Image (cartoon, rainbow, N blue to C red; front, side, top):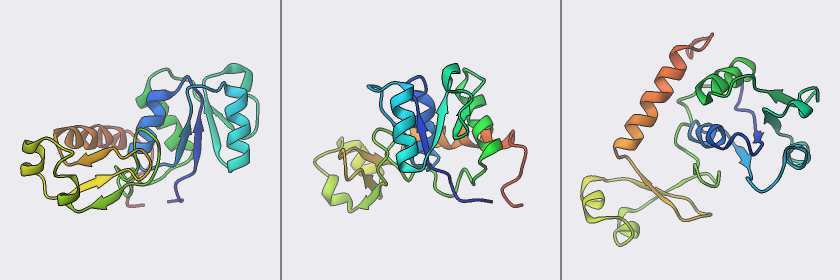
Length: 159
């Protein structure tokens, strides 16, 4: 299995960018810039450009995604650039892409609802945007979705 490629997603692929980040893939995304500008960013950073823009389809460093469905898009990406979808899952901020850092629960005590603090022992924080993450029901739903995606992959994780 190869290392996770670095990606740049154009502004048509916001949901996909968030899911790639949840899988642990370093994924640049900026709603404010168009596909051509994002391609320049991707090239400068050594990233694979992900797009649905037919005008960018023929560039050699672009992965044109045929589907509108984010699950199918993930499968298209993983078929071309396979990586273990669980190894680094939930290790990046889904909002801004920064790697999360584990923080002592006392640090977040006043920043999360009391029931969240009482129910969780571990917390992570984004060092860039300060968003706090914990193992709630959303984490289990995300991991369940990742399991569904993994079931349909053309390769197995233990190969």
